[in-house]
Amino acid sequence: MKINKLKLSIILGLLVLFLGWYAVKKTYFFNEFLGFFLSPFWKGATYSGEKSRGFLENYIFLVNLKKENERLKEEILLLKAQLAQYQERERVYLELEKFYKISSKLNYPKIAARIIYKPLDYFSDLIFIDKGSKDGVMPQMPVLAVAGGEAVALIGQVVEVYNHWSKVILINHPSFAADVKVLRTGDRGILRGRAESHPFVYYLPSDAQVKSGDEVLTSGQDGLFPSGLLVGQIVNVYRDPAQSVFKMAEIASLVDLYRVDMIFVLAKIPEISF
Image 1 (tube, rainbow, N blue to C red):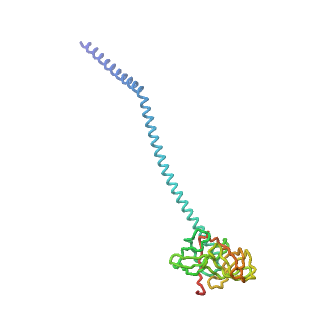
Image 2: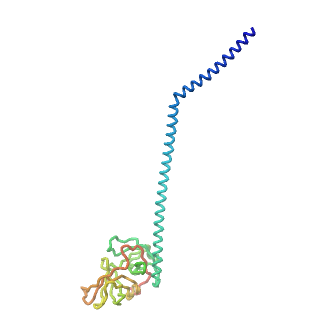
Image 3: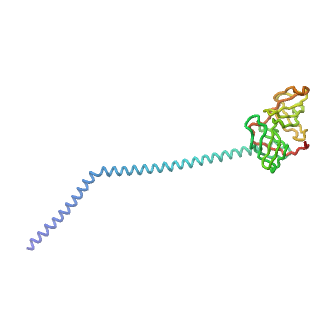
């Protein structure tokens, strides 16, 4: 009886071991079977996931790159604007330095000003400047500009003054007049504008030996302008049709009146009131 129970126990133990081994093998084979058929789907899902993640990462990278490019473009534009401002300031400082260096012999205060209005045509004969009575500007004061980097030349006269700006007529304005002389011959005349690109010198003596290329300066004998200010050069000489006993000469300014953008008011009060 005991022997039968022992055999039965052994058989049951072996059966349990066999069933356990079979279950393990069955599970293994089932997993192998399942893996064989599902692995393509798993690989596809993995590949799709990686592609999606890669696409998303690339998209985010491109978006950030675009933002960075826009930021850099804005910075470049800002730097260009700042560079232009610095270059303009440097140009102004050099212009000021040049003017004060070559005008040291003019024993009058000089007021630097920027042109804030000027007609576009070459025959314009008036300008507005950004300095007025608060800066010491007064009517009839001479207006100068740098001529060729080596001299200063008379280009006009203040006619109206306000607190923060002034109106200036140029030497080709019909209302402009100055007593001048020809440097080489000493002949005197009256410089007047004609609403054209060039002014004329009138009342030159009929025997004056003036010619093209002669320099014309202020004589200092009109009580308005100091003597020795360069005005321009003679380009043509004519017999005055209205006054046959006189000659007249066409004058070209030493300053490009069309392109000038900075002027200097000579703080000289007229010696004679008209």
